Image 1 (cartoon, one colour):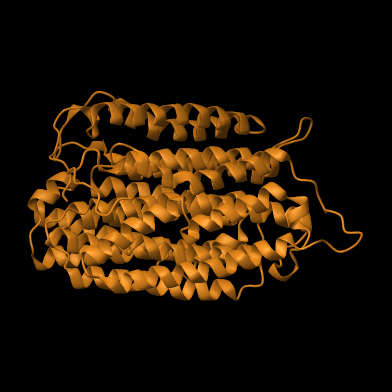
Image 2 (cartoon, helix red, strand yellow; image 1 turned 90 degrees about the horizontal axis):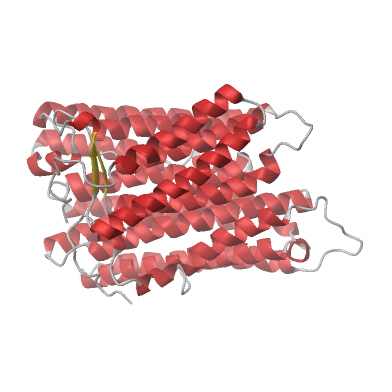
Length: 509
């Protein structure tokens, strides 16, 4: 499937794309100027307005049934820069808005400033970085050329890295520096590929590149460099070494943002490149290699997660495993393209996997933060009493885990169903086995955590801290979103294919 033909006019609703990008950054600047407790208020005002903008974009996209386009300065590519939002971008913007809103609610308990107290430096930094991450991701989703995508990725990196080291501890600073090194190396490779493409084809616009690229050595080199750089940023095995210490060491709200959202930016770019720019350039063996790395991530990440003594590290290694599922779609897309069956099943399956993982993993990390606050530790072997003290939180953890496993009616179930259907349709049965084994390994550690948390507490035990009910409600809300996402199968059409070639889903339930 190729992207829609280039549009040389701004479409109705196109200005909303500019607002979606600029509004969070305007909130960052205003919060920085006002400072103090005003930063939290500015952040919440920005979150509410930003959710409204994303809902308006969704409505405009559904109403038109086509991509939204905005030409910056009125100049069409290749002279100008276009912002575009097809169904994939709109779906990702919507889930990011939901997760940011839920994380904001949760963060009021950890980074809120009570009346009469001065705001801490960590609190000010968190609210500003939350908005910066949101604006950077929106720019990733709507950018229409590969250099603007590079700028968006750099903004996302420099918003995500400080989240790791908010507490200022030596180990989190070391994890943040390792994250930064991987991210900058990835940016260097991506930028080299961008230079090669511009030198060869004279444009950076995605839609124009899709029309001009040919099977030439320079194109293969550019695709390899850009993909390698993005894999480092996505933390795909074996380039995952920076992720577990970074995600596990950050505060719970920051971990939720990093695991659920930040790594999705680089993955989304891989999808743009392989599905929209290079569909006729990358070969099926190359896609099989990419998926083999994903399969290795699923097996290794899950096995290592089972061996962790701390809950946050277990969830971090689970993220390593779940990232692997996102890359199983690429050989399926290539094979479906080769057989002229249409790749909607594989593309939509990958998108649903990203969305269900985002909501489930954010819920899990925030649940781990509440468990730590209540018990005073997050040792997996000694979680007893957590179920009695935090019934909503443990329920949310179980629901999020069910989505990661792929139990119906979760989003993980629908995503894996579409990927399994595409694998069977293209006779790639080995990916079916990988997904089944991955689901069994995931169920093992989810079951282990829930059973130990539901065990009765020791006599005389009492919680170290009473966590606010709204924090538990935010965690449960996200887990329910992930668990009920499978109901998207009841929609009359495939939202992800808006603005793209419309092809019926293969094996849709």
